[in-house]
Image (tube, one colour):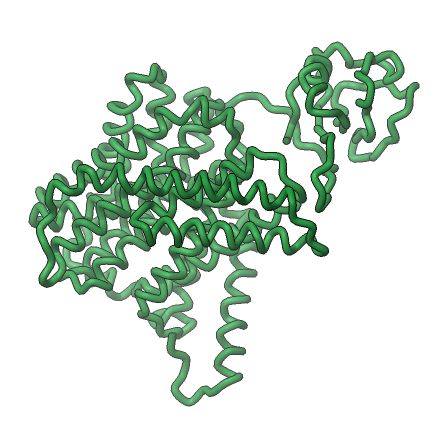
Length: 500
C-alpha cells in the first residue's frame, strides 16, 4: 500500500489507521439500512474499499495481490471458525448429507456449467473457462452467515441448515480446482491430469482429520487450563484456529475444512468460558469480514471495469450463474434427498457469492496467468450480481414460498454465566406461549426437578424476581437454571429453548 511518497512515519501509519477506522465505523452505521433493503452488508464494505482506492476519493494505491490473498485467507479461516462454533450436532445430522453433495458435486457441476457459458459466449478456451468456473463455483460463508443470521428471517430448519453447512464446506473443492487450473495455465505449468480425482478426496480427508483431532485436543486442554484472564481463552482458541489451517495445508490437506471441523468439535463440547468465547469469535469474524471486503474493494479499479471488453458478457455470465447454473445444479443434487420444489427453488436461488471468489481470483494474478486481471474483473461482476439479486429478494421469496416459521420474539435481556472453570449446570431462556401447560400458573405450583428453578423473568422490558406467587403470563421470557440430565423434563414444561 502506498500513501504519498512524501509522507513518513508515524504520519503514514496515522493516516492509514484513520482511514480504515472511519471506513469500518461508516460500514457499521449504514448496516441497518442495507439490512432493510435486503442487500448483504458485505457489499457496503466492498464499495467503500473501492471508494477509498486510487481511483476513488480516498486515493489509496493498493495492488499487492499476495498481501490481499494472505489477509483474505486468514479472515476467511476466522469466519469459518465462528460459523463452526455455532453449528450444532443436531443440524449436522439433519443436513450433512445434502450439504456435502452440494459442496462437492454441486461445486464441480457449477464450475462445469459456468465454463460452458464462458466458452460459448465469452470465447475463452476450455482451460480458461474452467478456471473462471472454478473461481466462482462456491458460495461464500461470510456472506451466507451474515445474510441468514442478520436478516432476522426464521427459515425452516432444514433449508437454513443446508445453506449454512454448504457454505462452510464448499470452499475446499473450489480452492483445489482453482489451484489445479491455475497451475495448468501458468507459464511452464503442467496440464491438469487424473491426479485430481484422488487429490480432492485426499485433501478433504486430511483436512477433516486434522480439524477433528485438533478440536478434540483443544477441548481437553481447555478443560484443564487454569488461566487468570478470560481473554486468554480466546487467544488460545484463535491460535488453535490458525494452527489448524496452517497444519492441514502444510500436509496437503484442506485448511478451510480443518478450521471448520475443529470449531464444530469445540462448539459442541462442554468447555469453560463458552459464552465469552462465542461472543469474542463473533466479533473477530465481523472484523475479518469488514477487513477482507474493504481490502478486496481496494483491489478493484472502477475505470478498468468500465473499460473491460465484454462487460455485457460478464453481466450475462453473472446472471446465468444466478438464474441457471446454480438452480439447475441444486435441483440435481437435492432431488435424491426428498426436498420439496419450494425448498430446492429457494436453496438454488440463495447461492450468495462474496469474498471467496475474489480471493480465488487473486491466485491466477499471483501466478502470472495470461489475462488474469480480466478474470479478476469478471469475477467482480459475478460477485456483485450474485449478492444483490438473491439478497434483495430474500425476504419476499422466503414468505412467498412459505419457508419462514413462526418464532417467539427475542428476549429483551441476555442472561448467561461466564466462568473460566467448567461448571455443572446451565441457563436456558424460554418464551411463555399460551399453549404451554405452565402459562397462567404460579411458580410454586410448577413441579420443578430438584436443583432446577426459574431465576429471572422479563415482562414488558422489565426484569422481575422469580418468587413462588409469581404467575407466568403469556409473553413472558423466563430464565431457567437446570442440570443437563433435567433438560428434557424442563423442555416438556417450557418448550424449546430460545437460545443455547
